[in-house]
Amino acid sequence: MDYRALKELVRRGEGQQIEFKLKVNHPEKIIREVVAFANTDGGFLFIGVNDDLTIPGLKYADEDFYLLERAIQKFCFPAIPYTLERIPLYDEREVLAFRIQPSHNRPHYVVLDPEKPDEKKAYIRVADKSVQASKEVREILKGERADRSVRFTYGDKERVLMHHLNQHQTITVDLFASIANVPRKIASRTLVLLVLANILQIHPNEVMDRYTSRAGL
Picture 1 (cartoon, helix red, strand yellow):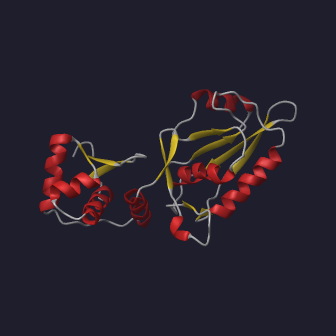
Picture 2 (picture 1 turned 180 degrees about the vertical axis):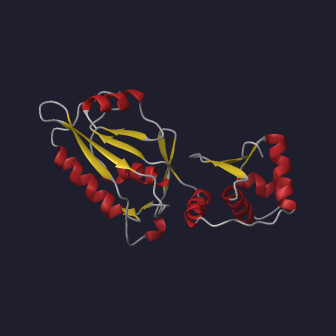
């Protein structure tokens, strides 16, 4: 990638597959973006680009590269492959362009303390933000990785669900559990299975995921 191509991407602003960071001051936070890209559609993480779309670059790019590379290797599980391009600017300044492909080994997690694996967190990309993945999103990512055909029984709770969606278009796990009078665990598992069966579509959100019927169903 040359400077001209970089400017064109930066002009579009941050989005589903683009994130800007001025420097690697807090690598343990920046790796959320790496994990989110790997868990979603992939993307570019540019180091040396400001949120206001200016491109000051990095004077000592080696330092920032070392810090982020070390954080990716140390805190991201399973390991996330990436490619790096160093884009020269002026006065020996550079922009680091990390390219992360959508992973076939997701979900990936940030694990800041190896002695506390239960505190691991997965992230996904939603528009221009990297948000923590819910339990349901994580299960869907695992199910997509398994690539198996999904079977489910169409019973009373499924009829209640589809009737609600016909009337209101969207539903949440908690609302489904309430109107179907089933435990939240069962409501969660049912919605996950229907997403994996391509009956429903999930719309992740940093506050609460929502589910809708797939278009045309």
